[in-house]
Length: 120
Image 1 (cartoon, rainbow, N blue to C red):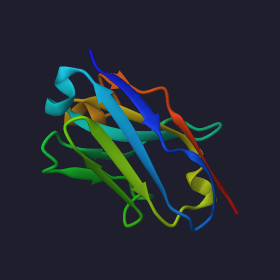
Image 2: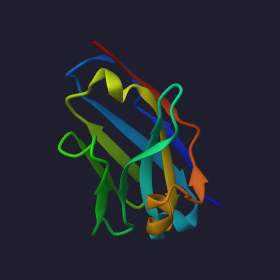
Image 3: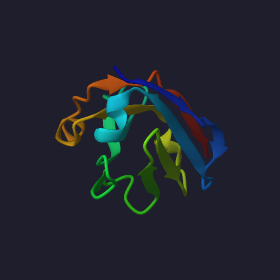
Image 4: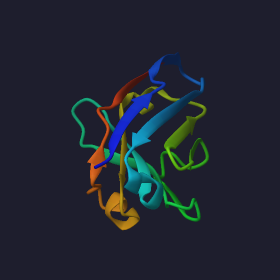
């Protein structure tokens, strides 16, 4: 069993940066992929970025490419978000599981989420 807890959300202005962190407890996290998803009001949850257990491979959505960076260690996963836009406003969720399952939106474990609000 893996438990995930996100921190670092908040209210920022457009163009600002935020760094989200996700602390994991549970043995399998260090051997599983990790990812960040987000869900904006009235929209479906979507993947933002994913990373393999050894950081060899990463995936970014089109909206995240060039602005966001995912990284991790054995117990945490991070999302550095730069040049934030109002359309980035959403609840951001940390997730873990097999990398291919993350890419299909079916991870094993989810965190409770952290709110990111970007004002114009």
